[in-house]
Length: 93
Image 1 (cartoon, rainbow, N blue to C red):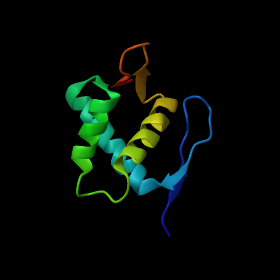
Image 2 (cartoon, rainbow, N blue to C red):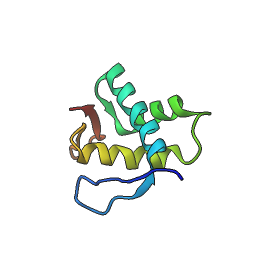
Image 3 (cartoon, helix red, strand yellow):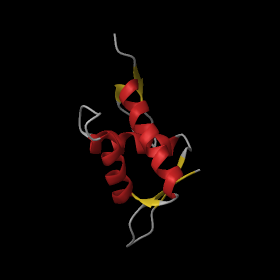
Image 4 (cartoon, rainbow, N blue to C red):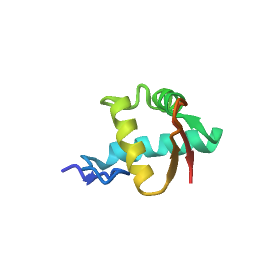
């Protein structure tokens, strides 16, 4: 049986129950991308993660990226800066 986990949300909304192996795969891609480049916009990081996982991931990479990014933000692993009129930027804590 596959192991699952409940994600967290930075605004204390309900998380989602996802497979731990998929979570770990996307988490590693996010952390690798941010270690390589520092701060990235949401769109650029989503694209980078998609390129890292392409062909090695089953499911919607964009959906998992958003879900895991929100969880990492809630856990204090990444910092997301949202400024009016500017793209959201993401960096490691």
